[in-house]
Image (cartoon, rainbow, N blue to C red; front, side):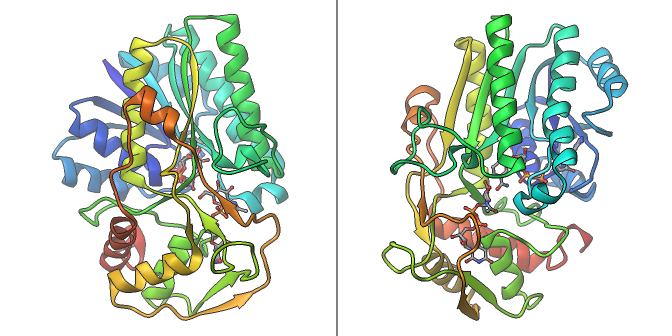
Length: 337
Ligand code: NAD
Ligand code: UD1
């Protein structure tokens, strides 16, 4: 029996495929490579000495999905495939809703037709909008402020309705906080195709000299040093969370939602200092205006995942920044090196 991983050539997907292969699972990857490089899959083979089956194509392609489910004995699906840039989603809402929402509908339709009803879905902490208090728990009110977040909420709702209609569906919705870091080999990592929007890849590109300096968006927040605080989680810990969620689905049917974060927030300044320490590089920065839509602080209560999945993040901040730097310094041009 195999696991289908949509978006498995991407950042979080590739790290999850490594963990699945290391756990002796048979893996099939479907990815249209719109935000990934096929070299990631070759590097996964180098890391694991194992291969996965790869289909280049879209989750919107129903005929291809039927072929994959017909040709392989698939028992569950981890659904990473999607578009994830918040700013871009504001300018291209149709594209975001089509890929993220319609893509999930088509995937679930084909799964149901083939009797496969075990699904792990990549959601995001962005679904909490502006939280009432911290740390954020799964039962907090949700609300989106942009099409990307709205698309994640819509999928969460449709998956809930799917389970209500057919109790055979077992679904884990995982709300990630801020994934960072890379595999310890330095062979796979985050490889943004444009100028990065997120903090860690931006710092990495400053460190290798591809970008001149970091702008820190705001230093007047009500946080200990005035800069934004986030819950950064090592991508390998996140990947492990998916394996634990898959195990859970086979023993406890239903639809479940888990935060995946560390529960500990770090400020922008703390991240820069930790990165400088790990890399020996100085990161030039200057303070600029707050970024629209940013919050002062945002971190998870992940105790539900600890209790019910027996999952705990094992990597420290040091390991997050060290592995980010190892990946970036070995591959200044990402997978094109
Ligand atoms: P990513 O862009 O690296 O991975 C997504 C993958 O999906 C890419 O390989 C891309 O080529 C593929 N893809 C896009 N559209 C597709 C389509 N129509 N058919 C098939 N493949 C398609 O992003 P990531 O950071 O690995 O994120 C994975 C998932 O986790 C996404 O759903 C994202 O919304 C979610 N998420 C990411 C973060 C984060 O900060 N990275 C945070 C919360 C949630
Ligand atoms: C962003 C997304 C969020 C997504 C999350 C995943 C936005 C508005 N939000 O959140 O939907 O779920 O990534 O990781 O894009 N910062 C700088 N300078 C930079 C970049 C970032 O100071 O060049 C600061 C930000 O203001 C923030 C922190 O670094 O305080 C982290 O930013 P980022 O990595 O973009 O993540 P989020 O804002 O948490």
